[in-house]
Length: 126
Image 1 (cartoon, rainbow, N blue to C red):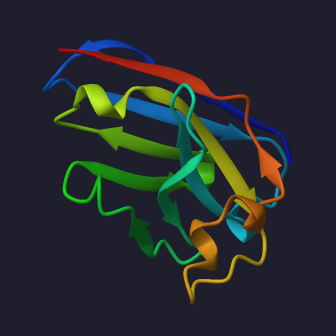
Image 2: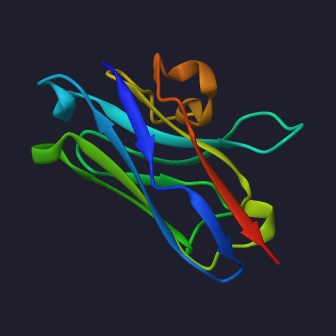
């Protein structure tokens, strides 16, 4: 599966964006999806995930501010990012895998996902 992320940009602190990740293929509904981010000089970190059954999972740092959703008819997963902070500045990546393990925090690991998009840059100014 190929993933194409979009929707990033420059926004002031407190602002919002909606990131999108479009997937190729006809079996999108079978894939678990996730968002990760990587700030300059830092490791890639888990942001949010959504299972095939639309169960959602969030990093503590974004809980209550970010919302992940999916539209299987459009082969797209979204990340609504609200109340942005300068520390949210990063390249945001979408990822997918068929058999993600939603226990013992496996789903938070980069290595749990086989397919990755190219990333979209979110810059939050103070």
